[in-house]
Length: 419
Image (tube, rainbow, N blue to C red; front, side):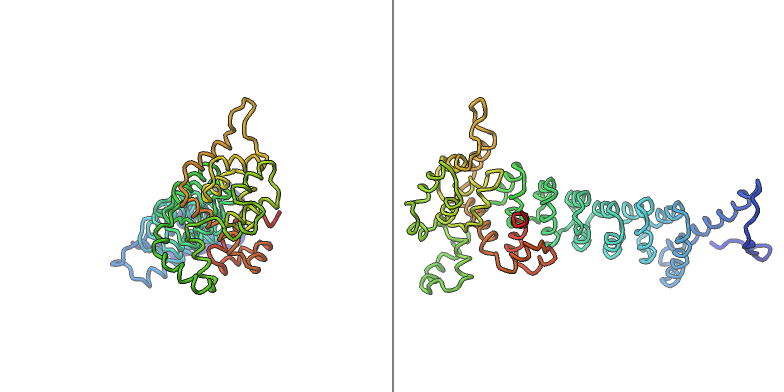
């Protein structure tokens, strides 16, 4: 490994600048070769197996190599990075320095080294460029802590890469971050829907800004039945009634689970004899008062009803009608009352209305109720004065202080409050 001893003592070159002569470039060549050779030899020592070099010797060599690399040319740093990409025990300080370098240099480690630790990858994700983060997202078996660091900035290319990585592992917090990012990058929703970690609560809230195809997939995959819950708590309804429904938490949970959707108490106070009559009246023109009345009769808070009525896609209207037991014609009645076109110039049903009617036909009542009640829970029951202030302020940093339904409300209503 060692070089032969020089025949005479080493004499450093003079500090003053040498005059420019035709042979000046040739005179500097040995210095360049010596540095390249020295870097190679030091990298060789770092790459030796544990049986040949102990931890202290490796650390000392690594420190020297780092000092040389700080002033080395990019191509020299790239050569060292490619050399180290094949070893299993890269000194941490050396790894972090190279990972923070340009992608042309760090790319060899990010693409080929299988032995980088999560701490090194997180440091790179936090300190380096979006392209560094994209390369990290493409690695096999990216852990939860690394994914948390990757998704924090909501960079579309990085999010797409990590969502396509089937071996990447998402924490619950990372999923919520990506769900929030899809508001401004809705094309990522389709990729997110493929992830096995996604939960119905995430899908239901993304529904509001998803396109028609993603909405169809959400309803097909996540509109689950509550039958198992209804069977499990069937006796608790009688117990809660005997207690006068005095516990608000129990009342809220049972309202989500129960089979009946329409609000009987609201019907007794309404000027309409039923929800069907209110919807029929809306055909001639939907007003704010009539929309609120329909919401109350359907067992919804006015805020939830307003979100449904103003949705541009129209599928929430189908969910509302199916969940409350209204007939198919009620969808058309609401559509007409909201002044949306029913037919085109040729007299054919518009694609938008046809899509909404297809949604109505495909949904089972119980599954539609699950979606509708989650929206009502998240968009109204979960609202508190503190949450409403956070929504108005756009305070995304406060998200961890709120429950899952409250965070869903913050996502769904944030843009509405800003208008």
